[in-house]
Length: 320
Image (cartoon, rainbow, N blue to C red; front, side, top):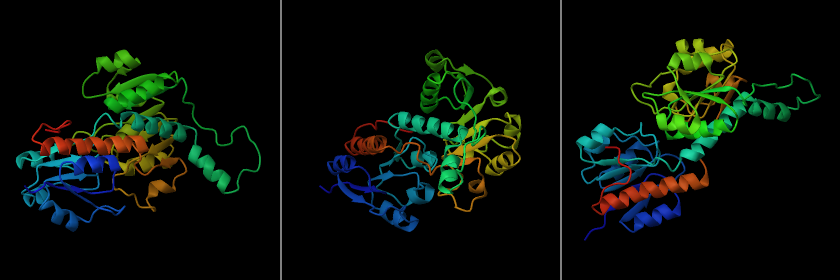
Protein backbone atom coordinates (compact mmCIF):
# COMPACT_ATOMS: atom_id res chain seq x y z
CA UNK A 1 0.00 0.00 0.00
CA UNK A 2 1.32 3.42 -0.97
CA UNK A 3 2.33 5.60 1.97
CA UNK A 4 0.66 9.00 2.38
CA UNK A 5 2.80 11.90 1.15
CA UNK A 6 3.29 14.66 3.71
CA UNK A 7 4.65 18.10 2.78
CA UNK A 8 6.32 20.24 5.46
CA UNK A 9 6.86 23.80 4.26
CA UNK A 10 9.81 24.63 6.54
CA UNK A 11 12.40 22.85 8.67
CA UNK A 12 10.87 22.03 12.06
CA UNK A 13 11.88 20.11 15.20
CA UNK A 14 13.21 16.60 14.58
CA UNK A 15 10.66 15.15 16.99
CA UNK A 16 7.85 16.39 14.76
CA UNK A 17 9.49 14.99 11.62
CA UNK A 18 9.97 11.61 13.27
CA UNK A 19 6.31 11.59 14.26
CA UNK A 20 5.28 12.34 10.68
CA UNK A 21 7.58 9.63 9.33
CA UNK A 22 5.58 7.11 11.33
CA UNK A 23 2.56 8.01 9.20
CA UNK A 24 3.96 8.49 5.71
CA UNK A 25 6.67 9.76 3.39
CA UNK A 26 7.82 13.23 4.44
CA UNK A 27 9.01 15.98 2.09
CA UNK A 28 10.56 18.91 4.00
CA UNK A 29 11.36 22.24 2.34
CA UNK A 30 14.98 22.78 3.38
CA UNK A 31 15.30 26.52 2.79
CA UNK A 32 14.92 29.12 5.54
CA UNK A 33 12.97 31.30 3.12
CA UNK A 34 9.28 30.55 2.40
CA UNK A 35 8.47 27.99 -0.27
CA UNK A 36 7.76 29.77 -3.59
CA UNK A 37 4.09 29.74 -4.50
CA UNK A 38 4.65 27.78 -7.71
CA UNK A 39 6.53 25.08 -5.82
CA UNK A 40 3.86 24.99 -3.11
CA UNK A 41 1.11 24.52 -5.71
CA UNK A 42 3.08 21.75 -7.43
CA UNK A 43 3.73 19.84 -4.21
CA UNK A 44 0.13 20.25 -3.05
CA UNK A 45 -1.12 18.37 -6.11
CA UNK A 46 0.14 15.06 -4.76
CA UNK A 47 0.10 15.78 -1.02
CA UNK A 48 -2.12 13.89 1.40
CA UNK A 49 -1.20 16.27 4.22
CA UNK A 50 0.57 19.62 4.50
CA UNK A 51 2.16 21.17 7.57
CA UNK A 52 2.10 24.90 6.87
CA UNK A 53 3.54 28.09 8.33
CA UNK A 54 1.84 31.50 8.33
CA UNK A 55 3.77 32.29 5.15
CA UNK A 56 1.81 29.75 3.08
CA UNK A 57 -1.57 30.79 1.72
CA UNK A 58 -4.04 27.93 1.50
CA UNK A 59 -6.90 29.13 -0.67
CA UNK A 60 -9.35 28.02 -3.34
CA UNK A 61 -6.63 28.01 -6.01
CA UNK A 62 -4.50 25.55 -4.09
CA UNK A 63 -7.35 23.37 -2.85
CA UNK A 64 -8.83 23.02 -6.34
CA UNK A 65 -5.61 21.34 -7.49
CA UNK A 66 -5.00 19.24 -4.36
CA UNK A 67 -7.27 16.28 -5.01
CA UNK A 68 -5.50 13.99 -2.53
CA UNK A 69 -5.27 16.49 0.31
CA UNK A 70 -6.89 15.45 3.59
CA UNK A 71 -5.48 17.88 6.13
CA UNK A 72 -3.68 21.21 6.40
CA UNK A 73 -2.01 21.57 9.81
CA UNK A 74 -1.07 25.20 10.45
CA UNK A 75 1.87 25.67 12.83
CA UNK A 76 0.37 28.73 14.53
CA UNK A 77 -2.59 29.64 16.67
CA UNK A 78 -3.66 32.27 14.11
CA UNK A 79 -4.88 31.05 10.74
CA UNK A 80 -5.56 34.10 8.58
CA UNK A 81 -3.40 32.41 5.92
CA UNK A 82 -6.00 29.63 5.63
CA UNK A 83 -9.35 29.93 3.88
CA UNK A 84 -11.17 27.73 6.36
CA UNK A 85 -14.46 27.87 4.45
CA UNK A 86 -12.72 26.72 1.27
CA UNK A 87 -11.08 23.88 3.22
CA UNK A 88 -14.50 22.86 4.51
CA UNK A 89 -15.96 23.03 0.99
CA UNK A 90 -13.26 20.68 -0.30
CA UNK A 91 -13.48 18.35 2.69
CA UNK A 92 -9.95 19.22 3.84
CA UNK A 93 -9.50 19.32 7.59
CA UNK A 94 -7.74 22.43 8.90
CA UNK A 95 -6.03 22.62 12.28
CA UNK A 96 -3.98 25.08 14.32
CA UNK A 97 -1.78 24.91 17.43
CA UNK A 98 -3.51 26.65 20.34
CA UNK A 99 -2.41 26.53 23.99
CA UNK A 100 1.18 25.37 23.45
CA UNK A 101 2.36 28.89 22.55
CA UNK A 102 0.26 30.83 25.05
CA UNK A 103 2.86 31.42 27.75
CA UNK A 104 5.72 32.17 25.35
CA UNK A 105 3.61 34.73 23.49
CA UNK A 106 2.44 36.31 26.74
CA UNK A 107 6.08 36.59 27.87
CA UNK A 108 7.02 38.37 24.65
CA UNK A 109 3.98 40.66 24.78
CA UNK A 110 4.78 41.81 28.30
CA UNK A 111 8.47 42.15 27.46
CA UNK A 112 7.56 44.33 24.46
CA UNK A 113 5.32 46.44 26.67
CA UNK A 114 8.14 46.99 29.17
CA UNK A 115 10.76 47.62 26.48
CA UNK A 116 8.52 50.22 24.84
CA UNK A 117 7.46 51.96 28.04
CA UNK A 118 11.02 52.12 29.39
CA UNK A 119 12.66 52.91 26.00
CA UNK A 120 15.03 49.94 26.14
CA UNK A 121 15.84 49.64 22.44
CA UNK A 122 16.27 53.41 22.23
CA UNK A 123 18.68 53.22 25.19
CA UNK A 124 20.65 50.47 23.50
CA UNK A 125 20.99 52.54 20.32
CA UNK A 126 22.03 55.51 22.47
CA UNK A 127 25.00 53.57 23.89
CA UNK A 128 26.02 52.06 20.54
CA UNK A 129 26.04 55.52 18.97
CA UNK A 130 28.48 56.74 21.62
CA UNK A 131 26.02 59.31 22.97
CA UNK A 132 26.28 58.31 26.65
CA UNK A 133 28.58 61.03 27.94
CA UNK A 134 27.03 61.86 31.32
CA UNK A 135 24.10 61.22 33.64
CA UNK A 136 20.97 63.36 33.62
CA UNK A 137 17.74 63.11 35.66
CA UNK A 138 15.67 62.98 32.48
CA UNK A 139 18.02 60.80 30.41
CA UNK A 140 15.87 58.31 28.46
CA UNK A 141 13.09 58.58 31.05
CA UNK A 142 10.11 56.45 30.10
CA UNK A 143 6.67 55.59 31.44
CA UNK A 144 6.01 53.56 34.59
CA UNK A 145 4.57 50.08 34.30
CA UNK A 146 4.05 49.05 37.92
CA UNK A 147 0.75 50.20 39.38
CA UNK A 148 -0.62 51.57 36.10
CA UNK A 149 -3.71 50.57 34.12
CA UNK A 150 -3.41 47.95 31.39
CA UNK A 151 -6.06 47.63 28.68
CA UNK A 152 -6.21 44.27 26.88
CA UNK A 153 -8.14 44.10 23.61
CA UNK A 154 -8.91 40.42 23.08
CA UNK A 155 -9.14 38.34 26.26
CA UNK A 156 -8.40 34.90 24.85
CA UNK A 157 -5.83 32.48 26.21
CA UNK A 158 -2.93 34.84 25.53
CA UNK A 159 -4.79 37.87 26.84
CA UNK A 160 -5.53 36.07 30.08
CA UNK A 161 -1.87 35.01 30.37
CA UNK A 162 -0.78 38.64 29.90
CA UNK A 163 -3.26 39.67 32.60
CA UNK A 164 -1.69 37.19 35.01
CA UNK A 165 1.69 38.80 34.39
CA UNK A 166 0.17 42.23 34.95
CA UNK A 167 -1.06 41.04 38.36
CA UNK A 168 2.56 40.72 39.41
CA UNK A 169 3.09 44.37 38.53
CA UNK A 170 0.16 45.59 40.60
CA UNK A 171 -1.69 46.78 37.51
CA UNK A 172 -5.38 47.54 37.20
CA UNK A 173 -6.61 45.47 34.26
CA UNK A 174 -9.36 46.47 31.83
CA UNK A 175 -10.31 44.30 28.89
CA UNK A 176 -12.54 44.43 25.84
CA UNK A 177 -13.83 41.24 24.25
CA UNK A 178 -16.75 40.15 22.10
CA UNK A 179 -18.30 38.79 25.26
CA UNK A 180 -17.34 38.98 28.96
CA UNK A 181 -15.03 36.29 30.35
CA UNK A 182 -16.18 35.74 33.97
CA UNK A 183 -13.65 32.95 34.51
CA UNK A 184 -10.77 35.21 33.43
CA UNK A 185 -12.13 38.00 35.61
CA UNK A 186 -12.17 35.68 38.62
CA UNK A 187 -8.56 34.62 38.02
CA UNK A 188 -7.04 38.02 37.23
CA UNK A 189 -9.35 40.71 38.58
CA UNK A 190 -9.80 42.10 35.06
CA UNK A 191 -12.84 44.30 34.39
CA UNK A 192 -14.82 44.08 31.13
CA UNK A 193 -15.45 47.51 29.55
CA UNK A 194 -16.39 48.89 26.14
CA UNK A 195 -13.57 49.71 23.75
CA UNK A 196 -13.78 53.49 24.11
CA UNK A 197 -13.60 53.32 27.91
CA UNK A 198 -10.57 51.05 27.69
CA UNK A 199 -8.79 53.40 25.32
CA UNK A 200 -9.51 56.49 27.43
CA UNK A 201 -8.55 55.01 30.80
CA UNK A 202 -5.59 52.74 30.02
CA UNK A 203 -1.96 53.75 30.43
CA UNK A 204 -0.93 50.80 28.26
CA UNK A 205 -3.05 49.25 25.49
CA UNK A 206 -2.29 45.76 24.17
CA UNK A 207 -4.01 44.25 21.10
CA UNK A 208 -4.31 40.45 21.18
CA UNK A 209 -7.25 39.72 18.88
CA UNK A 210 -7.26 37.33 15.93
CA UNK A 211 -7.51 38.95 12.50
CA UNK A 212 -11.08 38.69 11.23
CA UNK A 213 -13.38 40.87 9.16
CA UNK A 214 -14.59 42.33 12.46
CA UNK A 215 -11.12 43.18 13.79
CA UNK A 216 -9.44 44.34 10.57
CA UNK A 217 -8.34 47.98 11.07
CA UNK A 218 -9.88 47.84 14.55
CA UNK A 219 -7.49 50.52 15.81
CA UNK A 220 -7.30 53.64 13.68
CA UNK A 221 -7.32 57.43 13.83
CA UNK A 222 -10.43 57.65 16.03
CA UNK A 223 -9.13 55.08 18.49
CA UNK A 224 -5.70 56.71 18.83
CA UNK A 225 -7.40 60.06 19.46
CA UNK A 226 -9.08 58.57 22.54
CA UNK A 227 -5.84 57.39 24.13
CA UNK A 228 -3.83 59.33 26.68
CA UNK A 229 -0.85 61.33 25.37
CA UNK A 230 1.25 59.20 27.73
CA UNK A 231 -0.20 55.91 26.43
CA UNK A 232 1.97 53.02 25.29
CA UNK A 233 0.39 50.96 22.50
CA UNK A 234 1.43 47.36 21.78
CA UNK A 235 0.27 45.09 18.95
CA UNK A 236 1.16 41.42 19.33
CA UNK A 237 -1.77 40.01 17.34
CA UNK A 238 -1.81 40.62 13.58
CA UNK A 239 -0.66 43.70 11.69
CA UNK A 240 -3.99 44.04 9.91
CA UNK A 241 -5.78 44.94 13.14
CA UNK A 242 -4.13 48.38 13.14
CA UNK A 243 -4.16 51.25 10.64
CA UNK A 244 -0.39 51.79 10.39
CA UNK A 245 -0.76 55.21 8.76
CA UNK A 246 -2.89 56.37 11.68
CA UNK A 247 -0.36 54.90 14.12
CA UNK A 248 2.45 56.77 12.37
CA UNK A 249 0.57 60.06 12.70
CA UNK A 250 -0.26 59.37 16.35
CA UNK A 251 3.42 58.81 17.12
CA UNK A 252 4.76 61.73 15.07
CA UNK A 253 2.28 64.21 16.58
CA UNK A 254 2.82 62.81 20.11
CA UNK A 255 -0.86 61.90 20.31
CA UNK A 256 0.41 58.80 22.12
CA UNK A 257 3.75 58.24 23.85
CA UNK A 258 5.13 55.20 22.06
CA UNK A 259 4.28 51.93 20.35
CA UNK A 260 5.68 48.41 20.27
CA UNK A 261 4.92 46.14 17.31
CA UNK A 262 5.66 42.46 16.89
CA UNK A 263 3.51 42.35 13.76
CA UNK A 264 3.02 44.42 10.61
CA UNK A 265 0.40 44.49 7.85
CA UNK A 266 3.05 43.35 5.35
CA UNK A 267 5.66 40.88 6.58
CA UNK A 268 8.61 40.91 6.39
CA UNK A 269 8.31 44.67 6.88
CA UNK A 270 10.41 46.80 4.54
CA UNK A 271 13.44 48.34 6.32
CA UNK A 272 12.44 51.73 4.88
CA UNK A 273 8.93 51.59 6.37
CA UNK A 274 8.16 55.05 7.84
CA UNK A 275 7.34 53.60 11.26
CA UNK A 276 10.83 52.15 11.61
CA UNK A 277 12.36 55.62 11.43
CA UNK A 278 10.59 56.78 14.59
CA UNK A 279 12.50 56.78 17.90
CA UNK A 280 9.31 56.01 19.86
CA UNK A 281 8.59 52.81 17.93
CA UNK A 282 9.95 49.46 19.14
CA UNK A 283 9.76 46.85 16.38
CA UNK A 284 10.18 43.07 16.46
CA UNK A 285 10.03 40.55 13.57
CA UNK A 286 6.91 38.57 14.61
CA UNK A 287 8.62 36.47 17.29
CA UNK A 288 5.75 36.16 19.76
CA UNK A 289 6.05 32.40 20.21
CA UNK A 290 9.75 32.15 19.39
CA UNK A 291 11.18 30.05 22.15
CA UNK A 292 12.84 26.76 21.27
CA UNK A 293 10.44 24.95 23.55
CA UNK A 294 7.25 26.55 22.24
CA UNK A 295 8.18 26.14 18.58
CA UNK A 296 9.01 22.46 19.15
CA UNK A 297 5.63 21.94 20.84
CA UNK A 298 3.84 23.75 18.01
CA UNK A 299 5.51 21.51 15.43
CA UNK A 300 4.73 18.41 17.49
CA UNK A 301 1.04 19.34 17.79
CA UNK A 302 0.75 20.12 14.07
CA UNK A 303 2.39 16.77 13.28
CA UNK A 304 0.12 14.96 15.74
CA UNK A 305 -2.94 16.40 13.99
CA UNK A 306 -1.67 15.01 10.69
CA UNK A 307 -0.94 11.59 12.18
CA UNK A 308 -4.44 11.40 13.69
CA UNK A 309 -6.21 12.32 10.45
CA UNK A 310 -4.11 10.05 8.23
CA UNK A 311 -4.83 7.27 10.72
CA UNK A 312 -8.56 7.74 10.26
CA UNK A 313 -9.09 9.49 13.59
CA UNK A 314 -10.34 12.93 14.59
CA UNK A 315 -7.84 15.83 14.68
CA UNK A 316 -6.78 17.16 18.07
CA UNK A 317 -7.34 20.87 17.36
CA UNK A 318 -9.71 21.28 14.39
CA UNK A 319 -10.77 24.63 12.97
CA UNK A 320 -14.04 23.28 11.62
